[in-house]
Image (cartoon, rainbow, N blue to C red; front, side):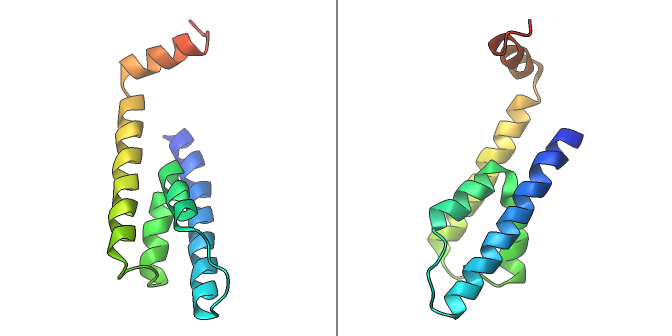
Length: 100
């Protein structure tokens, strides 16, 4: 659990920062952050921060393809973490790393 917090917290803070910067850029008609970058950060564990930032900044809330892809990133990330929590996956990763 501590490992997950250690991964999700920094990734979520990065997501919050990127969404804030992108919203500020949108308001000033400046260069934007690519949507693929925002999705990659969400997929890498920053989805809690992305969801929070999306609501707090009211950013990309009307853009439906973006929202659907974001929720897809959430689903993939949660499924991966659930799979990694299984004994079979854990044993496989240990074998792969040469720890067994």
